[in-house]
Length: 307
Image 1 (cartoon, rainbow, N blue to C red):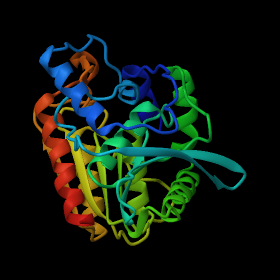
Image 2 (image 1 turned 180 degrees about the vertical axis):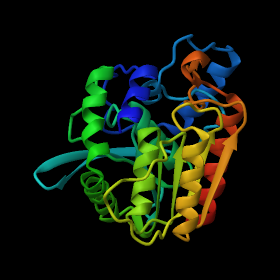
Image 3 (image 1 turned 90 degrees about the horizontal axis):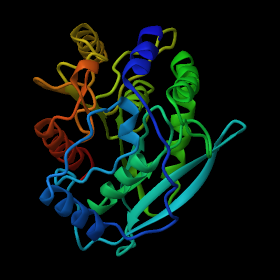
């Protein structure tokens, strides 16, 4: 745990953005923003740190949406123990038919605009997107120290983390818009670790996708039969997840009999999906080819396990 926290402290910063509104129409807006940003050749800032993933809505065409889709959103409260959590659900309200759902697990700063907007992007692709909450309603980190203080208890008590993730899964299953038998999960960075832990816990998920996520398994807690297909999207030069950790993960999944695949992008570091990541010396750098390919791989994977 110490190495993970130290690495995160070294390469990460976070800021806070205003809360999402309760409802919005985002399909056409997303495509318009993407076209405008790319046409203006916007340059990424020179400083990018891990948690900035949670701050930026990607303005690039590898996040494809359907321009004609009207995406509605709502906040949903749920509980685990004495803690109240708040998720952000997004769906295409032009149809009343239940459809597959995809959970979005946030980075170490808490449920934020980034994870909510990924849920909306997934809704525009025809799924119900649900940005889950690991820390509790309204709890967000506003600095490296705050983020680390929020994440550390989860890494030290993976059983607690699993219970909170299970509560989010139970919540989305109860929504009338969702086909409860067809659910998957994706996550970024710390969120990647979260969705892998859901698979390790035996959660009834069709599949999980980790984007440049932490791969280390829990210690002192038994794993169950893995039911989920697993896709890991990894930068080969990611200092947060060195090759020996990748090998250990591959051996773990093989020994567990899991249906797993790992895409390693050469010459690619951490935060490769973030257009503002541009600090190779700290191991965080945007890689547009890897970003585009990983999003396409996710869509193909979700199509296989959910459609």
